[in-house]
Length: 336
Image (tube, rainbow, N blue to C red; front, top):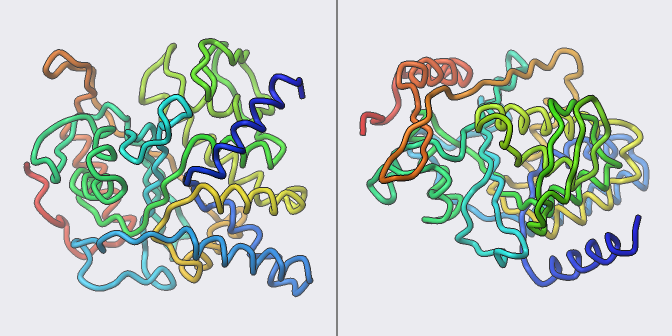
């Protein structure tokens, strides 16, 4: 690692200790397996993970689209992953806009996960403001609560849990894992986490990416669109899950837990988190399907927006209701 890059990494870590940032929790599932082995190392990691998640817990109002309290031990559930665009230049403000939204729905009986990427410029109704705007603005209007409420209204299903993550945490986790293997679709140059223009240069092809490079791939949309960007984010998320579940990643768990402790906000308790371990350990029986919102480019008040195809949206709503095995064909009023 060059002296200049080492300086940037050290500087970023110092700033993170002064600011609270968030991270998604999938990385904890594999380490829970270690506790089952009964080893001292596994017990240590298990205890550290429990403490980390307890300190990162932040509740939101339960979904009004559930008749009773959801129980992930027995119920089909959903988790919204929120990636927040709050670099050092943007001063880590809680009012930052979301830059990535991925909804995961889990069907326990079928051992299936359906991932839905929501383009950040999707033109949607935001209940909190009683207006239509880009979905990226929802987080700035009220954090995870308003984002969850907006996604529930959009997809007409309950969103049971959320995990809010910061991009610097994303970088640390990927680096702690020793990088992830991803197929880069084309050559491109993109800014880094410090907003330095064209600091990252990637060529096309299957390769191992470090944290900065993986972030650049997740963020870029210079040569395609938000739809393809969402697909890349789904692929990157799956690559992280796959790498975190390998035996070679075990020695990296302390670094991952440290990043999680500094950078995560979620309404999942540690007890609830443990119930998702079966999804990480289902092996070949686990079925992960990537879904996508469809639409077309448009403009509202002079600004670019992504206008969703209402017919395709309704079809997607039905797929997700079937995945969650909801008893009603329509939950709530999505007509606004």
